[in-house]
Image (cartoon, rainbow, N blue to C red; front, top):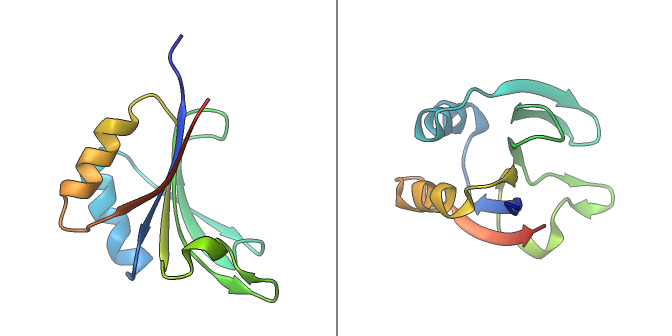
Length: 108
């Protein structure tokens, strides 16, 4: 049985509109824009929830604090959800000029 990985990557700074096409090209995916009051505005996602999908969003601050407080130094978050190829994605993201940092990995 293949284990699925839930990875979270971060960038110290960046612009979602500039990052989206770069990540699409690196991973061969297409993001779809979404709006959410919970996520303090817009974010991008590929694929449906429950299958492999990627999410690109800001590490926003709301009245309760920063979304991912342990990573307050990170402005941009990138989630690789339910992926069976975490090492491949990590290699692509870390070797790119974007310099993503792996923040956490959970394997289920």
